[in-house]
Image (cartoon, rainbow, N blue to C red):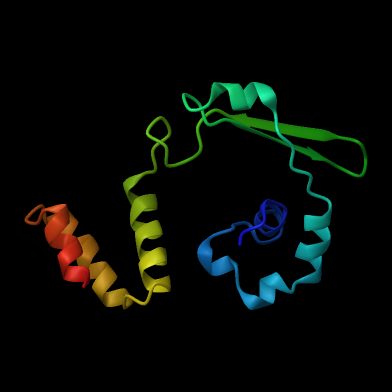
Length: 129
């Protein structure tokens, strides 16, 4: 199970919350765990009412000095309205495929197959088996 407070704390402490960041060491990291205890998740009825047209979120960070930093997004990265770059898609594919046990050279080969334009998506995924 993934915890939103832990994921947020992990991203703030380590700079990312990608699959490989959910390591045993990070799961036991006292700094991350302490920060996760300070993360509050709440439902915003206005944002909820926008779904499914918008999948918005608001993040507010309040510092110990009382300063607040607020960021609102209407569409998370990777949604059709906020697409990932080609490089981001490749990096995500490689990260997830390697985590699933696909050797890195095979992942890189699959990426090169897309680049060649000689293969359909179905043919490329057949090569992964």
